[in-house]
Image (tube, rainbow, N blue to C red; front, side, top):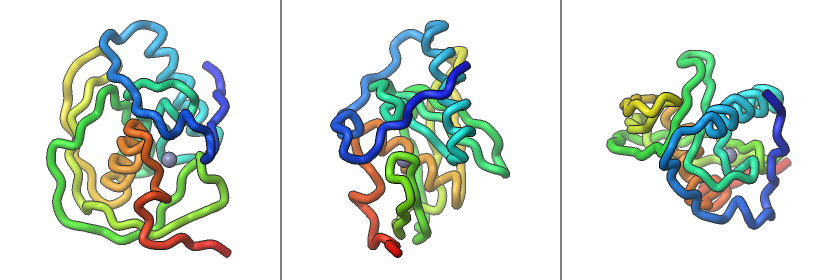
Length: 151
Ligand code: ZN
């Protein structure tokens, strides 16, 4: 396990579209482990593979209520409601913004053993699903923020 370098806004890699994972190899599982270490060391709620320079559709999320969630090739399959709340990103250090996101989001993904599962999140988790999946398409929350909270 290792802590990886987190790319910051302005790095071109963050703007590229990540490719799906077609085979879950030990290398992919090792990447998941390293992403978890990196997210925890940075005290983040989520981390997407492109943020550590790997253009693959892999996300890790950890919230106090839901614990650790690993998503490979995640897709949003349903959403409802809306929430306006504060959002930040490990790739945009020291800044926060207000975004509008769905209140409830259901994601379909593969787990680290290649098994398909669906997971529904509300509030913070719904926001994290949207934020992290956006990273896989080269998007940052600052692109969609209603306003930034700069001090
Ligand atoms: Zn982010």
